[in-house]
Length: 373
Ligand SMILES: Cc1cc2nc3c(=O)[nH]c(=O)nc-3n(C[C@H](O)[C@H](O)[C@H](O)COP(=O)(O)OP(=O)(O)OC[C@H]3O[C@@H](n4cnc5c(N)ncnc54)[C@H](O)[C@@H]3O)c2cc1C
Image 1: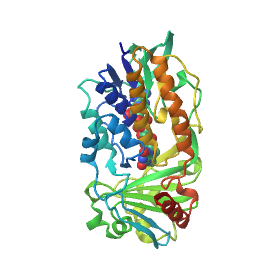
Image 2: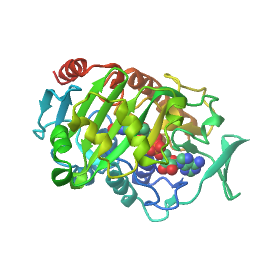
Image 3: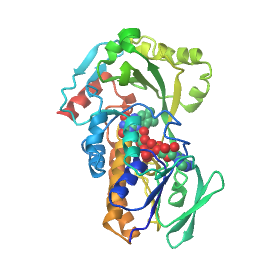
């Protein structure tokens, strides 16, 4: 007999776990703070890797559904120097191992694969406590409670389940990103569209970078990264979009106009995202009846792996639970034994992406060439 599983958080990690459990006919309920699947925009493109995210989707029996939402051509990569010089222009020949999908589309694939009622929307967890014998009581913001024999915290960076296992909290990594969107770029923002090309653009320099994707419907989505303390960003008035845009753009004076257009020509107010990470190698001693996955377990500086790892965690945890009916502790031990070193290694892995603030564009080209060579 399998213990019914209670998952907190319907992100990609929690939903992958729920799906794998469902495939194995193990009862599962997911409690999610958002009031509905569409309560919040789900963010931009994710490249789903053949060595982690795609393996998880295969385990979930959703490879065909995943392929159906892949955006063709988006694995193209361009690296530009700050003056606009094109240092690398790799087309997408359709053979790459990192196809791109909109995060919202992938989340919907997972939601559609679960029986109605599996996800309980509008259930924000405020805390959880041990009842002994591996059982836990979860409390929701509205005062309601549930008791469970197997609790999984898949509730992201600020997990309310994590304190059951660890006293670690995420710390600011010394860098934030400002997100912008340019719509109908081919007709309305042609210079920026040309700079980004068909897929991804990286334009790094020490302490600052512009990173952009061509999303669905010809939308350019840029992440403008700056290594500055939180106080520096606090002094920028994000309530005044024009002033905030001008302040951020000032940090990129002298950069090519087709790159700075990704800041100044945004069709939406710039959105600040401060970046946090748990200590690299974060782990805990086994506590009966509870574990964590994804960002709740190993939030790291964005390096293009976080969502992929969250899904692999979910798939592996689901597989371990299925393989050990009636033996929750062995299942959690098997899962954590693989998850701890994998996430620690990934957090230190230098990959092209949002972790590239310390790199020059030329250094990044060397790195990309090494990785693909
Ligand atoms: C700017 C940026 C760019 C990124 N780019 C990439 C990328 O290109 N590729 C990649 O692989 N990763 C990327 N990541 C990392 C990736 O977004 C995360 O690692 C991934 O979303 C983690 O998935 P998760 O399921 O663990 O958590 P989340 O996606 O954070 O999901 C957690 C869920 O739990 C819910 N929740 C939170 N608190 C509660 C509560 N108290 N009660 C109930 N529910 C709750 C949330 O509403 C959410 O639905 C990026 C991150 C950032 C910041």
